[in-house]
Image (cartoon, rainbow, N blue to C red; front, side):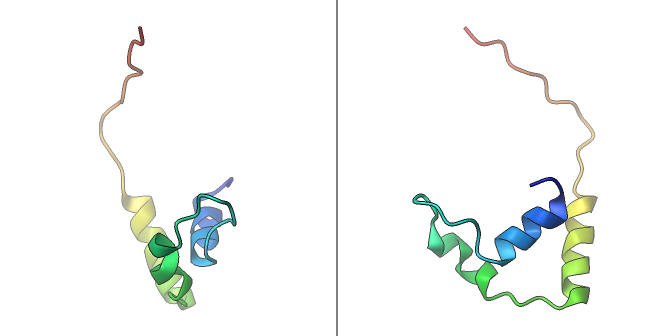
Length: 61
């Protein structure tokens, strides 16, 4: 996925078919049927999530 909106669209469509797909976690998303306004609200919420710190790469053995 290149954008957050593409990722949201994928999840709302039920995810990408694969052998490890856990349908129970996507059941509500598949049935969400969001309006354009609801999807815009979801996108605004997700874009507002931010952190004010840097996560440093750990030193591995």
